[in-house]
Amino acid sequence: MKGFQAKTLALIDRVNAILAQYDGPLTLRQVHYRLVAAHVIPNTERAYKALSARLTAARRAGLIDPRRITDRLRQANRVSCWADLPEFLRTVRRSYRREKWTSQPVTVEVWWEKDALAGVLEPVTDQYEVTLYPCRGYNSYSAPFGRGGQDCGDEAADGRAVLRRLRPQRPGHASGHPRPARRRLRREG
Image (cartoon, rainbow, N blue to C red; front, side, top):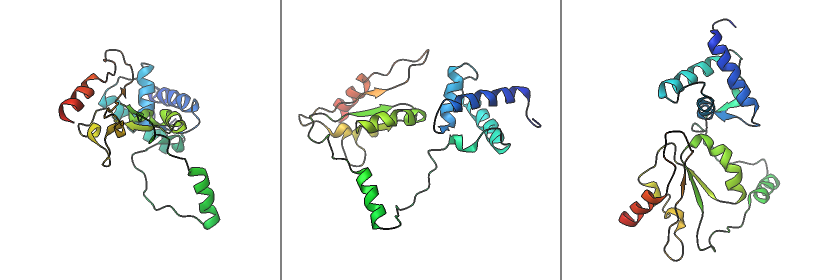
């Protein structure tokens, strides 16, 4: 293909193979981490930016289906509209779920380090109506103390807040552990 080096074409083939393993689109970061895990590229900001540029060029050239890579951070905001009242009522019927967690002694939330894998975890957390909170690679100092005016974990009736932050296991990185967050909540919250 004109304008692409053999190395870039091989990368594009790897990316298309990764995309073919999933029913829906992936984010650029998901593709990046799959390539890092396969030892195709290093886990650096420079490699990420280079991958972004190469995949943009590949999509423009028609070598990768542009609908297979999504950008979840840039979404259009529009008020929900329906053609008529019956269509709205069908939507309400499909969307209604009775709140199950308010009567429980503890509310469960899943905090995940990487936003890139939110799409993989959402079907499971949705099934159990559990809040999924992608931390986007770093922990917010403010987040455990409240989001939208609610205490983290909707604090249990006995005053306990349960916090478990999950992180992917990578060579050379410590595993996710809740103790530092618990200490900070006890100390400051």
